[in-house]
Length: 156
Image (tube, rainbow, N blue to C red; front, side, top):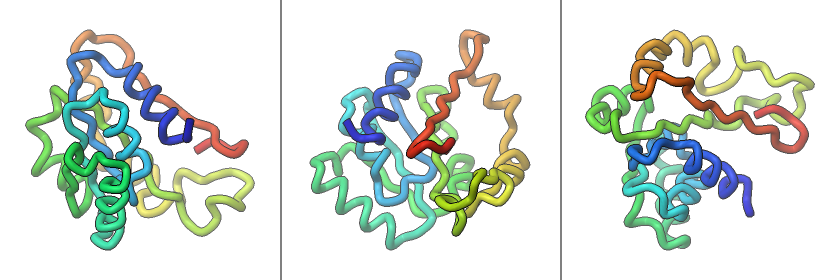
């Protein structure tokens, strides 16, 4: 199974049954997005990507895998789209955020720096994210699951 397939499997099994929508905030060319759509777990997958040319690749890839009708693509900044277009879906959704590659030193840096990650640094993500609001979305007042992956011997 591919890494994207394993991620989709883990996220699907960790999600509450009442959550029927998955929103991929950094869809790129669709690797994770397609894996989520192929899983059969989600009624709809929403994919957000800043680069219009990359969206075209993602749509092409989704068609190759036969899931193009299961994915809605959005072009723009994920924070704006979540707030302005997809906020009504919040109670029914899982938000998946795997930011893009991280910058020029991503593969060669001894320690991956969250504060220098591109296009969004950890500081920017924290400044534009209300973690209390995220916690309030948890219907059962339990811990929110976060899944952290190590790929090729490094924390990603």
